[in-house]
Image (cartoon, rainbow, N blue to C red):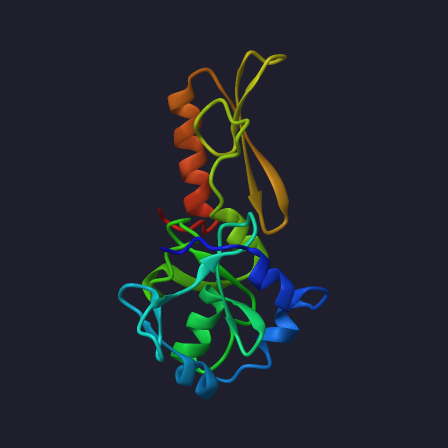
Length: 177
């Protein structure tokens, strides 16, 4: 459905900054080429009636080529709905990079976007920001805040560590999942 050769998008954007390319398209031109359904997040090509977009490269985001320029569909959703591109980064609230429903997208700072990241591949606790400290022989909890990383403490149980992390997320404005 969405997966196609990444080569097409890479050929059109090679050596060019993505944001400078996006600034070339207008809401009017975008609406001439595709229709966007905010409830489903799908872009449909106006000429063929087919679903537009494919995953380009390994980053997992959906892209489209319009007028020989490559665009990220999650950024084009903002242009389609608001008439402007997002001023910062687009966060997929549910972390699904292919889910471009309007209710799942928000314009956020890089810091806020990072707060909505999932756990890393090497995470052994199953909880973001919680790891086992061999030296302290307890669960270590940390969180990133607007002023940097902050230690939330050491805990004897994973349950208590998870609770501390959840409180830290609420206090520091992390998005609810």
